Length: 151
Image (cartoon, rainbow, N blue to C red; front, side):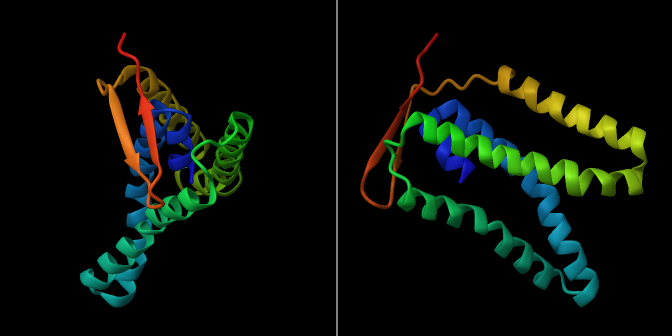
């Protein structure tokens, strides 16, 4: 949902969100595959279930594309993006950070969170995309055109 809504906001926002979520999907896939592999001792079963869990996000984009028009009011769009970000931040701070404290210790966990946030912040500024125009052809037949100005 965040990638689709971010793409409506602008090409740079959508691509940055897509990259952040793609980086997030690597440990998520490992977290799904490892327990399945150790339980079944089948690499194929672990791969299938990890891949199946990864298809939830593209399916979510398709569903959201049908639910929200491309001409969504900017205040509603920003509210939805803020809500998604708030849910993600809550889950990290409430669920994952205490678990990281247990396994890696408080000092290492705080360093990891800091460097992760610093990396993503620097990445947002460092990568300017030389794309002048990108078209998304939605399943409903509507076209959303995101244009990035050349500096």
